[in-house]
Length: 446
Image (tube, rainbow, N blue to C red; front, side, top):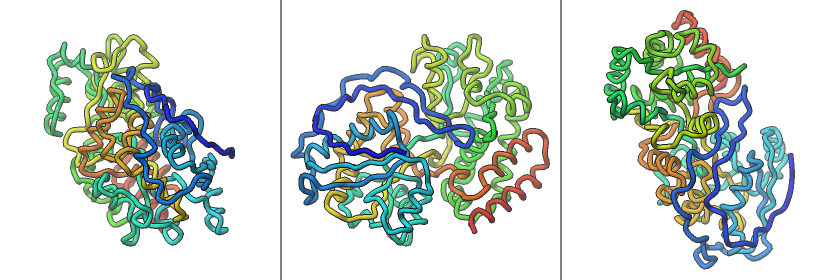
């Protein structure tokens, strides 16, 4: 844990930075770190915001805002760059504190001494609902957010959380050069993807690299794949139903998704090494197998960080030519990680912060700095990195967004899900496995 006070006085922000590692420690994390940006920025970012463009909402120079968040290192530097124009324009003082200890936040909230704002996970909205200030009372610019973001951030009819950062997982990575050589086209529907997979098999290619080994978290790439299949076959409301418990994990729709996944994950015709490879190949190695020479597989379904993994392993490869991605075709929405701003205070400096981050200028600044993606639609065309721009457009065009199921249900649910999918790939009885996970779902949601 660390505490420090920052007052950013420069209005010129370095906007052509490279994406850096988003340190989520394995094995407990369900998502790997984000690596280097996939290519150099396409062009210079726009000029920093003029102070007159920012509404200080009555805040005066010297007013303070205490913050608690999980970011550190380069992530924290990115946030500072994003907030620099606000600090310059209004003269407010940001007192940030970085910690990954959820208990620290809980203790302060329970003691009646919470930070003015926190950037945390969506699950804390329900936990702190009686302590939080509604975004609509803080000057939020709601027109810059899709309704599904507002709905996710709403508890008991109050919009309590502002989504500030997102990292979609509903992506498939591939080599454009290899696709061109083999005459394959990017699928635009799930049926087209299925047909492409079968064509690859008929051509003697291995379609997928599905390795999911990750220490104690082995299985997380598999459960991510299941969730994306559910977004195709059932939609985001169904996924949210699993998260809130209205749909049991042993529902027939979940079973059908596992069976679709199992056809690919358990056969050497469809994935590198068959079932044994799916369980034993590390998730980073699974990415690299698609881009080796010769390639061991044609595609890998993975989060946005995969591009950085490829670049780090194969520095001579070029984004857009040698490696690229497309959204999972047919998915009715996205899954991914997201960070949410919550306010425990309605003082003017907090209102200025909310108004700025939710404004068009704030969205553009977040995108230009390249701190993952911004759910603020005003930033969707402002990215200076080609891969981020493409991901940003996928996010802007999405019809829904669902948090990772395993991250959203407390208790031992996530571990049960990881263990269950690993047992299934190893030949376990699917009904028994889903019943066990459903029991963990019930326990976690009590």
